[in-house]
Length: 106
Image (cartoon, rainbow, N blue to C red; front, side):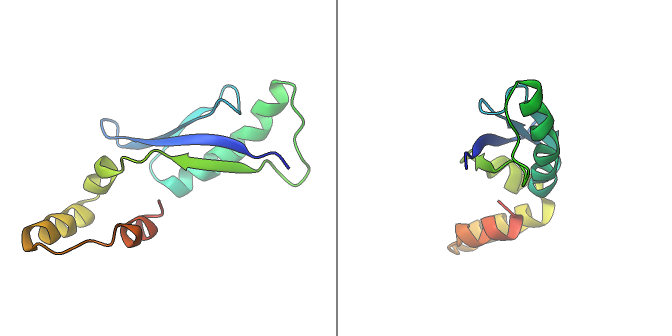
């Protein structure tokens, strides 16, 4: 089954995640969190695909959310995470970035 790629990026100025897609024509939406963005994209994608003359599988539209690599703005927008990151940098502590991403749902 074909998977539709959706690009997600954090907009540090507006403090929201933004999703666009070349695979889903017309898709452009935003949300405060990645889980909310996934839900919004999943709700919008079937209708947009139908409007563009594409078939929509009965079991739903398989989406591949590709997150742009620079998450610094998002990490620093969370006050608790910002405090933790600054403390870690000050102390010379090494951060497990994969663990940070998992905890933030990235």
